[in-house]
Image (cartoon, rainbow, N blue to C red; front, side, top):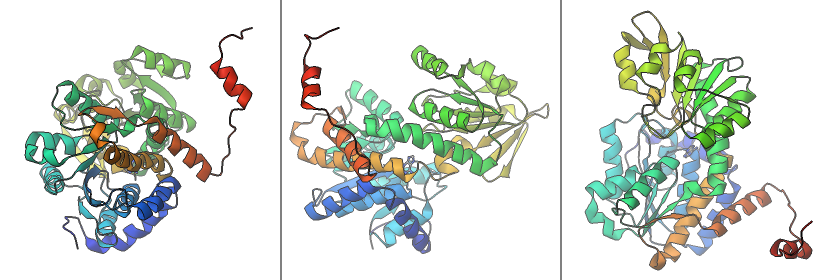
Length: 419
Ligand code: ADE
């Protein structure tokens, strides 16, 4: 068996059944796997992946392995690993996994280093911790790398900063920015799984609540839409005038974060930025307010300030910490301020991860095919890959769409004809 560090191999049989459950909902990735199995486009390539270790990720790892790659996987968040999935990947699929749910920061980074020690030629990251560790601590392994992919908005922002500072060593494809990724995974995936995480950890009624969404990017749009669908009064906070205007015209109340803090019952941060909810907000919150984050890092809620403002704290339900303030007011923090959708629930459903991970698999193939032409930059997903994923998804959902007639194509190319 390959090298690994996971919680318990005996969890494998439960993990395998869950991986198969997700597989049935990932027809595009399954189709790519079948093709990879025959053609072996990744033959002999070492891939280091730093992703949430979920049933959906397991199916991506199987696809890469069936394509001929040697695959090494670590977690992209200390609280998102599904230990049964990690066990099955090791036992049933022969994939090296270094991830344990609840691992501390030191173990989290030692697992990243374990993957980097395998000298990956392709990096597949979610949040850019693998890439940043490689560039900061293991520069000697950079020479082996052909290229990489990045799954999430926060990671793409970090990588663009690296490219801007001239320190990015190899080409990386921003999978997040494919339309078949962010329009579905970020919006419908985060929308549903965030509500799922809040419900699994609290079982509160969303209907009639004042539900505050901080950030109206694609993730925030999804969370707001689903909270409204469940009967909440949804309030949006934003710093970008355009997004704020969009929220207004989508029918939401847009308020300042201090105003929202006074009236909110449930708060979700999805901005990708630091200290969105901080001391000044905690001070004016109502008794019983619930705080959750669905942004990539645990920096959006200033937990240190929350701890310092409170006189005591205790765990009142799994993953729910009650902070009591000197005046007796109580505020509840979910999942230590880490991604609530992956810590308290199972992350995005397989149906949307199908498209995200189809893009991942195809982009690895693209990197290998085009390696001579690519520079150390952040690249978009090629348009052909993005649209092929959309077409395949529709076809596998048994949905037919129209195509342009010859006359319509001609009309779209012309300019002479007006009113
Ligand atoms: N990110 C969000 N949801 C996910 C999932 N189910 N698997 C892997 N990464 C994710």
